Amino acid sequence: MKHIDYLYFNIYNYFYRLSHYRPTNYFRTQAMFLFSLGSGGWLLLMESVYLKFIKHTRFTSPMQSMIFASSIYLLTAALFHYIFIVKDRDQKIFGKYEELAEQNPKQKKHFWISIFVLALPYLVLASFAIIFPRPH
Image (tube, rainbow, N blue to C red; front, side, top):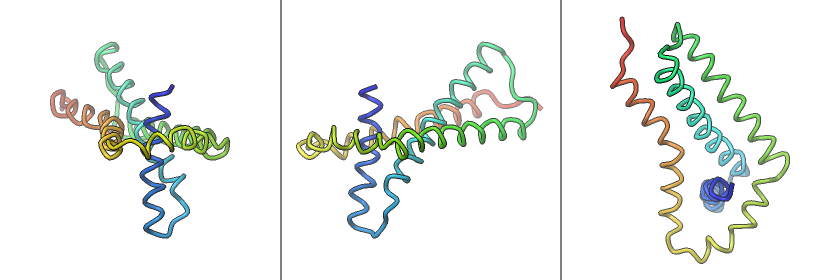
């Protein structure tokens, strides 16, 4: 859980620092949605691996897969909104890591690692589409 908290903190801290330079009050929501998008990607990747390699099947239509992906994104966004915004878990995480981040000279590197971790499932899903194309 500590690694996930730190991953979220890196995203939150980036948007928080960005809010100092541009007038926005939505940095909490932006961080939550980006984290939700990355987490939804990991869920879709696990589902894709399960269907492809264990069940040896696919969704029957692109519309069915789009509805499934949309429902995953909406559910993760709703869940993370409740956890991070309503329950103020993001504030607790920020308070926990804020002092450590200010002393850390590799703060930008950790942010880019966090972005890569959130983008990785989409890169893998894109490679699946190239390596295992749909039969016509």
